[in-house]
Image 1 (cartoon, rainbow, N blue to C red):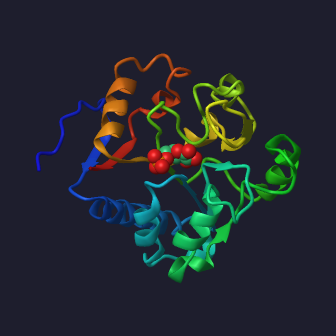
Image 2 (image 1 turned 90 degrees about the vertical axis):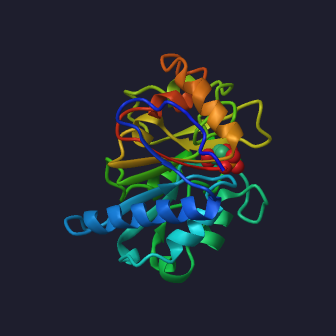
Length: 239
Ligand SMILES: O=C1O[C@H](COP(=O)(O)O)[C@@H](O)[C@H](O)[C@H]1O
């Protein structure tokens, strides 16, 4: 099969593969190598993963990587404000698919805590993130076909705040009318300053969305992923 053509900006690295599994494996190897290297000089490292369906094979591949997992803090880029046994819970997927085998020794920092809404639960979420040091080490972003990444949705009334590059808050409560559940998301300044950032995509539709995002990188509120399409980003894609 012919690898699709897409012009990525200078400094954005392309890792396009034939299958979701092979790309997930390459991403897992790259992430583990980066974290291993960081652990030479850091006591602990942070690993931010995305929700949704795309990361599932990556979680499986990463959980098998040799790493001093006890020194790894794992957290999600965003979460739906639902209980962990809800099919929409990203936390459940991370626990079942990533925090198994070798990776079960990692420390997981949940973004969903007590409280009826993300606003109610915000203080508890922040308290749980206290040990985290910035910049984050690794951030793996996903993207929706509306151009959202994490839970930075174009239609969320809180978007301008979550996308404010000068915001000092780690997390923002998001209530996008397009989504069935309220959300909580790491903010743009936190997600956008990691030492290693990858965008993990699956499907030709996602590539078309990426092309659309690249056609006008200035209007970041129309497609929040635009804020992250900058030199240093590594794009991992499979059909
Ligand atoms: O709602 C979400 O969607 C995006 C993309 O999900 P996918 O199922 O198309 O992979 C994801 O990156 C985000 O974390 C998630 O909450």
